[in-house]
Image (cartoon, rainbow, N blue to C red; front, side):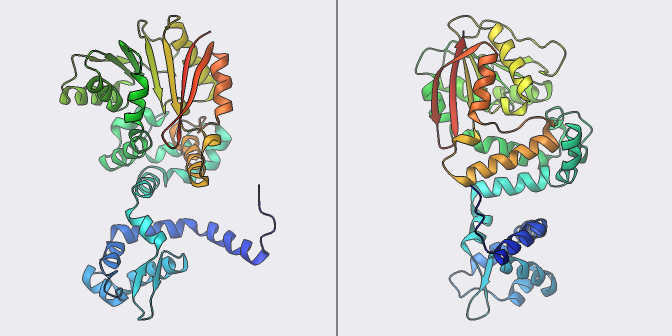
Length: 353
């Protein structure tokens, strides 16, 4: 619920912070890239470090370092002690050394920043109008294999950061019953397929994705020595009549459905349901905005929705659980198990009605 009792002067200050938020963000990116944060942190037990010393040690102008540190100080990212030397605040420390914050900053800077300028166009057209800042594709997924190495690194680190931590727990839950053949839909680099194959020496996995992603995924499977039990099936879910093979006892969709609109999700799940027998399970793993314990997690997910709007495809988002549960039902599936997974995720185990 909104706090309407905030004082006008405080509300005005917050409004100004939002108005100049891109300036603060780019200042933080520069302070990180130029090594200023690291230099200040190195002197944390030495009484801090002066502006002039920072500039001299990093071969930068005092003017340049000064304008960055001034806005950083006003934003409570750095502070000056009684000696006039700079120290990083707790916020500054997290901006520099927290893994999740690092992943989010790199994703924002290297993948999203320029594209976000076109957000209003994307809202009007329902298309990822900011994607032209990265390449000439209809969705970002077509171009993942063609992004620059730096952009690919930022994108995959962002994608994997929010899934890798749950893999161990997910595998324990997944193989609490026998699994003979798993379809890993949206396999990306093949990380989960490879983990499955190493966790269970008998299971076979079919990775289902676009050709560009599958080429990299199969190369990774070969490097991991599991290529004899991991195969690939090419698909474009947005093509005219996509289909998947039959024969899997498990269909795995982890952080995949949020890449599509609700009508597209219903179509994907219907196609999957048609390929399932009565004993097969379809397992959905997602981070739902209405199932987060902490406000900052909800905030990150809602910001990610804007990435989908302006860059990924123009029509998807991070969904609330109630939205997706309705789509699951419409696709002819029933949820047999609904349980938390890790700190942020939910696992839905579904079967055909």
